[in-house]
Length: 405
Image (cartoon, rainbow, N blue to C red; front, side, top):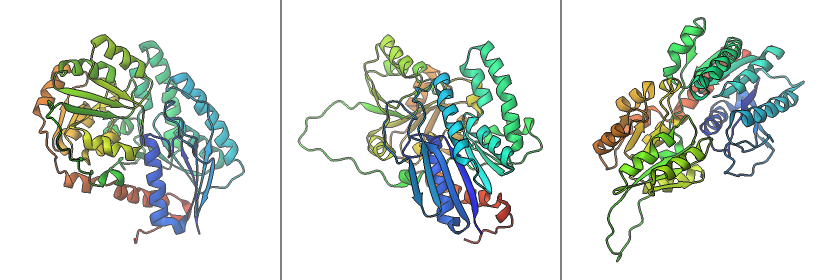
């Protein structure tokens, strides 16, 4: 007796995004631990996270107990309008693909609420149980990134969408414990779980040692500060990196790898500050990041100074922590407290605070830092294994399932 799962994720490998990697990790956990009990139908998109990153992927894959369908959607540059068109196309194709199919459980992972609401719509229409994985509070985010008047209107509209979505779900997982006050206040009748991102096995592999160089003239030592990830309004890199780089121009270089909706703002701010020590590169695959991390002296992370980001827990924190590298992080709220208390040699400053960033940079110990306890606690494999069993037990066919593995 198998549970048939409709698995919805807008992003999925080989696409590059935290949601993509999280979705794949859960699918792998299901196949590794409960494959005899599940048939998974993943419906996602062809790689489209970054318009500067192109990857080819099969539109249909058939594996034991797993099918993956990748739908083609309009390209976008991470703007609200073009992303809305892309999701609209995705939603219509999903409804068509899932029509007349019988599922026992729907799983949807979502940061901007829309994939979650799509899962809720199909769940309500078909009477199928729904398991939601919420990676962000979209209603809060809208008020931070949109002009005040538009933000309030959009927030009111999407508050209604959020309410109907959350209440339709049989179970809701929140990626950050920092979301608890928001969701408990709005949905006191719901009980939430907290399966966080965790550390991917790829980053648990020891970093290769630097290649030794011989017979080369000594060069002045410059620090290499690396950021790899999305470059959007939410990260606010344009508000911190150019100014900070200018202040450190005699001792450090910033290497920014990624793309996103605020890339042009970052480029203009770099030019305005005259920061010649900032280098930009396109998004790269995760295995290529290992070489980049090996060469880094410091790993950099920043979230914009917005109310919405005081509740989140960035996946990048887990990835960085596994490298043993010093971490310089502009964070507030829950993520700031998490990094300060749980990650050794992570210097945290208030977002957009140049002086605070400089002070934190000076406080770092520029040597490898073993974080064995953190790594053991936040192994993604272990977290996703527990989540896989929790997901399976949401199915009517396996409500009494006992974890024996």
